[in-house]
Length: 575
Picture 1 (cartoon, rainbow, N blue to C red):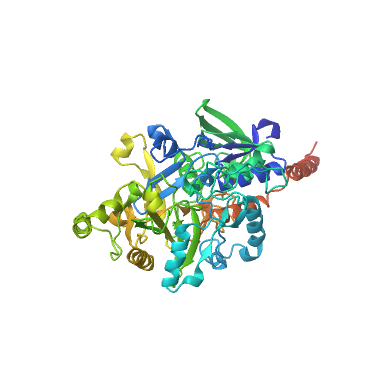
Picture 2 (cartoon, rainbow, N blue to C red):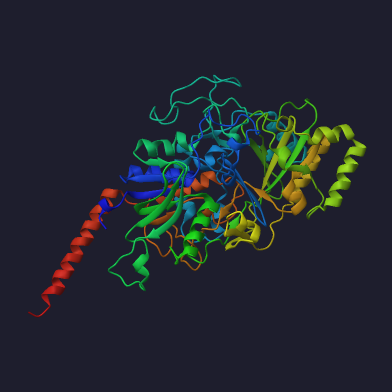
């Protein structure tokens, strides 16, 4: 089909780290780009002021809640993630760390490429675009982590995180002034520096966080990309090549483009034709869309490897609540300001929510430090009663919501242990079908431990020595199900459809002009926050897509060669 037959050259589905990077780089190469994002555009003015503003905070479309924070519970894991224009960058902790080189020798991407040689340049580009710098807002939680690390004999592993936030030496813990663009020679938007309010994960209201709408997405739109907010993709159908037999795999392989059905909050349902697609709807979102298209028969040749090798960074969340003000407010600083490594390699980061966002009070309960399995309700009741008998005032203060964020240090614990799950698309039980979900994704495989002994011992020691009370996440304590903000994998890189879903350039096996660029491509546990790696991988993938003018010249040359071949064949036909 001719280019003029398409509404766009590329449809980018999702505006997170994969989608925004793709959109910017494609527009730079001369392509027409439309970005479809099911989330809303969130501005500093529309961000929730407290966690009680639940409709502005949670993403629960069935209840018409269109916030930016989503929570999904599976059999093996509870996943926390963002959903908005700018994807996870709106609600992530803006922690941008580069993993150890050993991760490239693990998982399905091992051996596909000389990753250690090619990736450093893409990491550097990602760091420059995202404005990565070392944390300059050292809060009480960071000092507490450092003190505890020294007491535990791992003080030399303490570090301040690399984060995507704009810092200024002139604005300190006060409402900041507006500055000119500090990153792109004045071509970017105006910025206000970080004041250390701890609000990174509930949406920065001061314009200090380097969210994607201030870099990649900003320039993609400046270059002409069209952004469709509150627009969900429901169907992707390859346009048929009528010159092929319907039994020929090339009959419907995307070489003629794709017809995509969109569901918009404003326009309702409509269709567009696109020559190529970049799917960047997050690991869970992209898997779900691909599962749906294969199940409907729209794209029946999607690899059977879809949904395999799901990773959670082997994470666990622990917390310590301090009951007096001797240690100061734990909510000051950036969301994740520092980290340490324990002797066994377990990575722990000091994490916080801002004052007034007492989210932990909804998810937290007494921790089971010494329990390597789920805690029974009876055992929990006994611990709870014992706590109230021995220290009634302390017990009451420990779990009341008031000042939870201000008085709590959350410990995000991660390991690079290659635990993996499988995601399957299956018929829903009656109660989910009744809610309108006929099919759903569910996890399978050996359970991932929610209990990390070394991390639990560290948290217990902190609570004991620093005069606090330890807590864990409800799902971890009662169900032995770990909680993660970093669901990765399921759309692994591989050599073929027999061992992966996309190739090393992120091209979907068995289909043409279809790329997947998001956390679904992460092919092992990283042991660090994955956003920088997703950005760098997408930079790598986009670097291999030719400029549109080059592609058109190649297509024209191919057409001329085909015409010549036809003419030669015609000369052999007898008169």
